[in-house]
Image 1 (cartoon, rainbow over the protein chains, first blue to last red):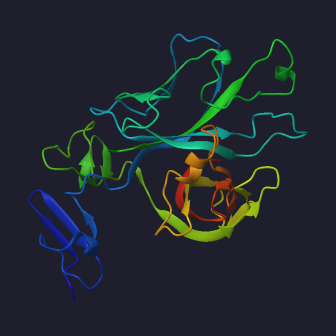
Image 2: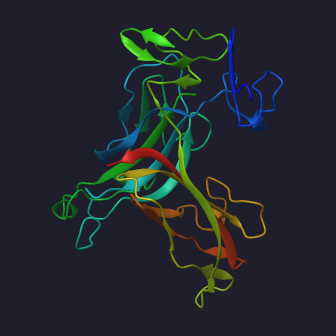
Image 3: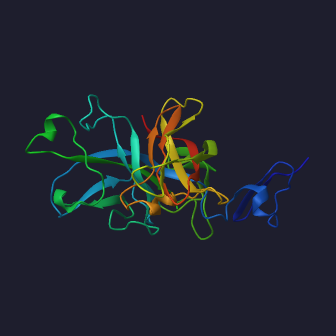
Length: 159
Length: 138
């Protein structure tokens, strides 16, 4: 029988079936190694819809459950949600239409930035024509004066 | 492993970080979800020449089905030229298109509909997907 768990001072290794866990074991034969930078932990994930304010001052924000002592890696996607309207007879479904964007690890930094406690999406003027994709929250909102909205899917990783 | 600030759990920190802390980066943290793969796949698709645009090829939507999760999960979708070893995530062939176009994907609890993007100068591409068990939408 193989020893699949090594728990030592400052190190934990879980091996694949058939391999003894050891500090010399190749990574490909491990399930987990505490020396790895990222164990796949997700701090939070979800979607958030914003009403566009047509100003270039300030940020739309997505807050983390708690503040961290590092700025984590984030994947963002621009999405359409069932709470939006796109001139079709019915509300549209969940439809991811752009991305992913990796913020805080390169990528489209003009679209969003990440702090230790939140994701910041710069506010923008509607006429600017930049990301994200704009929709209407309802058919009524599509008539002048128009009210726009957009939604972002976010995944915040513990790394 | 044990009781930390009133809750039972399991925490593994990288070298130099105290696992008993609350704000430090953890390699494994039972307070959090962890990425779990539900299904992966890839397919080679063949396009149809666009009669209005020489050298461009368009594709039908590609539908992926998987065991119903009961919610809409986190997914990653990518593509690559058909003679590549694999697909890139984020998608690579978007550069053939105007910069505003990306792979659009409808996400459902039991499947995806991938709006396969046009290609230029090649009529085939590989699309790939990774569906995680992690919930993003209701």
